[in-house]
Structure formats: C-alpha cells, structure tokens
Image 1 (cartoon, one colour):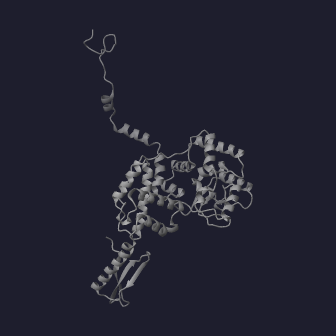
Image 2: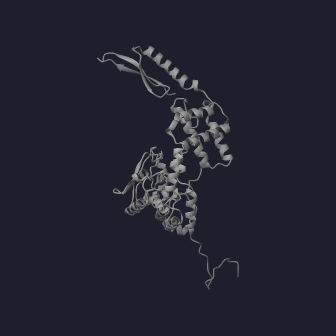
Image 3: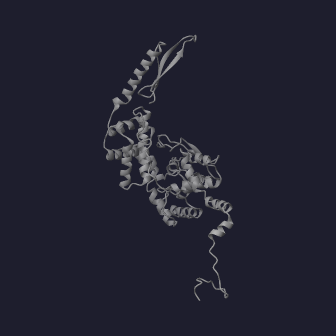
Length: 414
C-alpha cells in the first residue's frame, strides 16, 4: 500500500544539524510540509504513522457511502472539468451499474461486480462497443476516487472489455464528393438562404480542414486569416455576440485553407449582413439563438447540439439527391484525414492537425488507407515460396492418354 505521508529531513542553516518534517497531501489535495521541530527518528516515525492513520480515516472510512451518493459526490468534485454531455453519460452508466448490482457501498465493489454488469449488458442486447464504453466510464469514476484517496485501488482496473470487430472507417470517394457538392449547391438555390446553412461551402471547408461539425458551426470570421490562408479552431467565451463553446480534446489548433476556398469565403462574407460573427450559422437562426440567450433558455450543451436546426434531416436530403448512401457528416472529416495520410503525411502530423488526444484514434485512419497492404504481401509470398514446389504440389495430375489422344480414366475399361 502506498504511503500517504513521507518522512523527510531538512538541514539547518549551518548544515551541522537537521530536523524531520512530514510531507503529505491533505483532504483537499493540497501539498503540506509540517516541521516536527526535532531530530528523533523514532518519535518522528510515530508521528508519521499517526498522521497516516488520520488521513486514511478522513479520506476513506469517514466517507463510506452507497454508490448513488458516491456518484453525486464524484460529479460535485469533478465540477466543470468535464462536458455536461460527458457528465450525463457517466451518470447514466453508473445508474445502470447500480440497477444491476444494487446500491451497495462503493468500497465493496469488486471486479466480480464489473463482470456481472458486463454480462448483463450483453444479455440485454447491448453491442460490445457500447458495453466497453460504459465500462470505461465506470473505470474512470473509480479512478478519480483513487486519485482523491477515497479508494486504495480501482476495482475495475483489470476488467476485460468485450471483444468486438473493428469498424471500417467510412469515407467518401472523389466521385461521391462531387455529386454531394452538386446536390448541396442545387438545394441551396431552392432553400431560404437566411434560414439554411450554405451547405456547399460547409462541405468544402470540412473536406479541406478535417474540422468537426461543432467546430465548423462555432467558427467565427475572426478565426479565419485570409492573408495566411488558415483557420483557427479555438474556444469561445460567453459575450454579447458569441456563446460559450469548448474545443474537444485540445485547446486550439490552426488548419490550412486553399486559395480557392479562401476566395469563396471572402465572397460569402461580402454577402453577409453586418453584425453576424459566425461563418456558417444562418442569419435567422443566429437571431433566434440571441433571443433564447436573452431569455436564459440557451445552455452550454446547446452549443454542440442545437446551433443549427434540422441539420441531419437537411444533410440526408442532400445525400438522397446525390444518390449516395446514408452517412454521417463526420465522414467528411474522416475523408480529409485519410486523404492527408494517403498523400504521405505522417501519423504524428495528422494527429496534430486533427486535434486527437489519443494516437490510437489517428492510427485507425492510417490502417484504413493502407490499400496496398494485400498487394505488397502477395509480392513477398511470391518471392518466398518455391515455384517448382507449388507446381509439384498444386498442379492437377497428368492422366494417361490412348493412341487417339483421349484420356484413359480406368484401365479396366475396353
């Protein structure tokens, strides 16, 4: 068991003597260094053990609670360090966990409880990927309790995740992109420009920068540098003109724009009325959001999900018009990332531009673009295997023939 209190020494100014002091973190996580004002080793060790007991009693035993109360306590301690949507997912997973194993004391949870919950989710028909996500969220809650010294170990630390086949990275090919852009342009001419997104420009920007949907819809004209041909993904503060919004995984990043795309953005900006800071939020929608904000009916999570009305329905209409299979708008981001990797950019470079927090996420796209993997393996196998051996073992047998050149199937036949 890791010690909560360390015994250290501090020399005097002349360097001839020393005194002991205790080094530890208190209940609030703040580091403390308390001088014991003496150099008696045994006495200092007794004081260290006493402080150790006090911390463990205060951090663990005194806070014994059921899982439902433990969840509320964890969310209060976490505060605004996680998104509101993430908080809702954590609470949903823990409440589901409680529904299976019961509202027991959180200190009595074991890996067996986790395995029971895993099987219960699979039995009810949850997909393995969904079950894995729930288990990761539960592990994170218990891990935070471990960091806060409410637990001595994470009960779900070594639980095995259910196996599931890796999903194929869904992207659009060049012909599909052309058809989708043509359909988006046609739809824009039919829809009210004050109420609908400029879909063709939105799709072009997504294909060029690999930006997420939320990043695009929360992009302002200040984020676009027309001279340097770049666009910045950065968080927004709650002001009179803009609403609060945070970037996923990373604080900010700068992405490239092509000259042709910048020209389209300049032309589009000249068409927009004054006083509308967002690039892709329709005029009528921005006015409506401002009214919601004045009434106090606009929440932080709305900056992710409600910036544009009927987004998915309009996008599906464009896909149908382009004769493309139903897909997600996020597939444009996947297309941009795979194009970058296919053009020779390194995984690390793509990871930085994509704003991925985990290298494993970027690596999935790298594997998706390795289209020549099978061909290269075939060449190696052809070089390694002996061709004579292949012909000897795998060629069809040579059957005897008669004088007329006909194959003799059975020597007993006349």
